[in-house]
Length: 263
Ligand code: PEP
Ligand code: MN
Image 1 (spheres, rainbow, N blue to C red):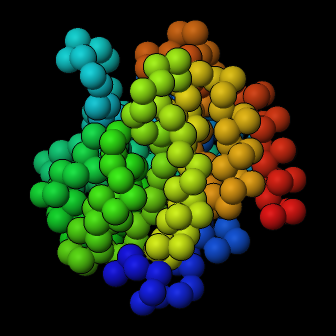
Image 2: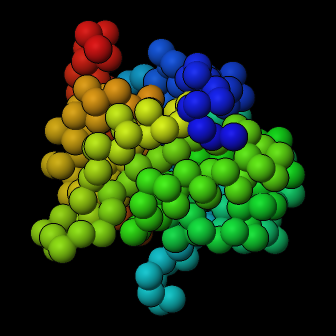
């Protein structure tokens, strides 16, 4: 179902009125984790003014250590909904457990499946029953074929609205958090008709790598960007080191829109 051979045109996915794919860029911005209403509101207002069209924020966080901040859970989801009401940006947030399928289907505009759950096949099959589009992040060590097969699981179970997200893969390099695989854009473009967006924040793990890699992703033909933006990165509860301040995000989007007009 994801195969380009049986679907020659690019798919355009509608996320509560925001189109992603074809000539439409999905510009997802927001904090790694939802920390408070005031925090998300300030970031969302600034990101929207800069041109972001979707708001991200983790309510349920897949943390490496069980002792790290795990997210605010359902309270975090309610904060996202309240900010959406106020600012008018559709929301993107990660679903980790089938326990919350119904509440996510009701409240979340674009349901994110994180890298660590890319091959959680039971969860993927459940997503087929939902009406909401899915943002499927690439697994830490997934090949293109494995990633496409995970999209296929969702599509084969009844939900064809899938957007792929490259977020860096594990290599021998340890200086960066992961290695951004920009080659995936032309490769997946050839193999599938699904939109492909790039998350340079989790790829590099350092805020100053985000701008060059985001620009390179757009130049390589990505259908959008997912970028972590925080109003006070030094005090962030998660991923402060890779988060852009709103002013830096604003400057980046100005450059992105210039690149997007020439490609
Ligand atoms: C995230 O986007 O917040 C996240 C946890 O990303 P990943 O699943 O790519 O690590
Ligand atoms: Mn993060």
